[in-house]
Image (tube, rainbow, N blue to C red; front, side, top):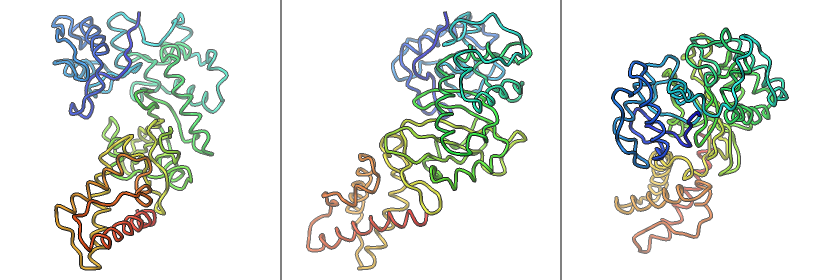
Length: 395
């Protein structure tokens, strides 16, 4: 029986950040690795014996994952194993477990046959066109529909029905959900030329090829439905597996609701195939408003990444407040300034509407007390309101 995991195992960011690493999931990966020959990147002859601890990648497991991925053609060497994706699919295949989520495997079908099986045959034609083209153009350099093509297999060795069955219903539905959101934006889906790797973590989506990335970026930049990510928020989307930098565009929406994120390789770094881009649904949506320069006014920072709050406060908000106070020849003592800074940051990271809540809050900044407090307090509130408008006009 195929083995799958519920959450990613290993480490992100070149080994500097832990995956969820549930103990049971780690044990599944260890068991698979221990069943694969060393020559294929496994640990069969030198088994991993460490007992997994929840939340911490077991000693040697991260190295073993890296080693396995590096010895398997077509796998991205990223140091983590994700549910239903190519690394665990390959582990299952080599360990004799089959493909996770694959269901009953068809007999193989006719290689090159593009017939789409039910229930997927009833999907919208524009989506099926992309799936069929992805299958048809699959080769050893683009890795289209990689979740359904183990190793170096191609349309010459398996039918589209077999590929879809190996991808499995869970990841096929990921494709459909992303398509449904993207196709709701007029003219957006035609930019998707082919689908590569499909994935699902706390977000879900796929990598894709686009023959006209600059046209797609222009579409998003001037769409009323998207805003361009700023550097801190971009850090989690910055590079793809081929070290191409990407600009991310976030769908504007309701705080806390799902939103589509599309990350496009920046100009000048596209490859001959247009570059590998990323489209996914983020269930911690942030974009709320769009500035005049098409960038994002963030909301719900606490729900997704805290570092952008500190960046905004330290590089934008506090200098803005300092300048307003300087107009009345007031300089906050270092301890008071830090207390005000921390108070603002805390407000941003514990509320759902970024700076909006500060405009209407009954709380007062932590000032030391004295006759100037009322004046300084008013200036801080005025500066926060002014900063919000400045941000929307200039960032």
